[in-house]
Image (tube, rainbow, N blue to C red):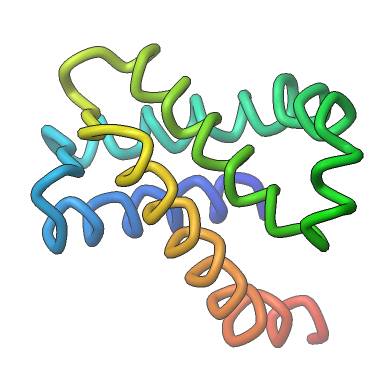
Length: 118
């Protein structure tokens, strides 16, 4: 249940990002949910491999390189989704990864943790 809520939250964030930035385009709510689903699958399968391969750089940057890894997974999602989910480039993917990470952190602390405590 928590995984589905996470997918829906990411889909809402994708739609909000598409509204704020010209370089971020989502064709509709279905595409946002599909992109969020693909991103969650990539986070399970590809992201751990990228983290292990870039561990020295991640340690030297005190974990900030994880935003680059998140941007790479967003670009992979863009490639897999086709024209229904478009990012203008790596800079937009990097900015989106930062905003997505911060928004998920805030939503998790404000909404999901109080629900888990009950």
